[in-house]
Length: 72
Figure 1 (cartoon, rainbow, N blue to C red):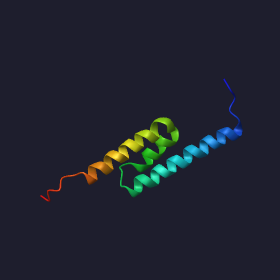
Figure 2 (cartoon, rainbow, N blue to C red):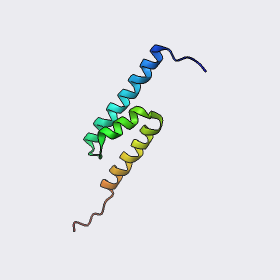
Figure 3 (tube, rainbow, N blue to C red):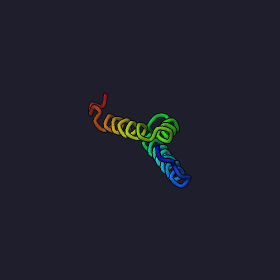
Figure 4 (cartoon, one colour):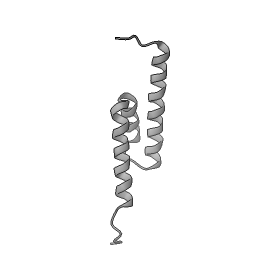
């Protein structure tokens, strides 16, 4: 197995931190529940967390815009 250099590790951590920060601000702006939990999940488990958040955000936005037009 190949060794991970310090520079590669730093790039990976900064990339995950940027993704988590982006998810947090996106969740806050779109009023998605638990933005800090989503940001932590994306930071810790990027390959699973980012697609999971994208699906969650898509479902929430679709649910808000595709709701019933009945005012009652």
